[in-house]
Image: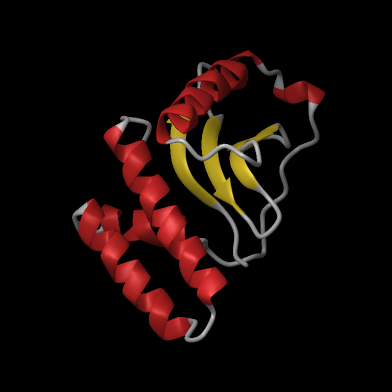
Amino acid sequence: MKDETSKSVPADNPGRELHWTVQRTFQGWTCSQCEWNEPVPTLLSDPDAKTAYDRITMAKFRKHNCAEYPIRLPSSIGDSFTVRIRKLVSRGFKPKDAVELILQEASIEYPGQPKILEQAKQEGEDFLRRLRAGLI
């Protein structure tokens, strides 16, 4: 469906951030400066397991060396639901309200497309879970 990033976690290396990325064929953490990534395991569904995955990935991110990976090229794909939620939050909406608005927008933009609506719902739930865990 759509692309790109949610959370920005500053790294020990200035100018480099850990981003949550959602694309049609990839969901996981990526580096803002290089092609390093850590995809979410396919069968990972438990919220506690996802939080543990996030902590482990942050440790791996801090240890990786950008020089060992190709430089990240800018994406030409549109914003994911997560990015749209973050934009609303940055404009002053409460996170729960922002998620609800995006779900309403998705139902208008994608009528009769339950897979996309489910993806929007999942991204909203993941956003709120990461926010509660202090990851974003």
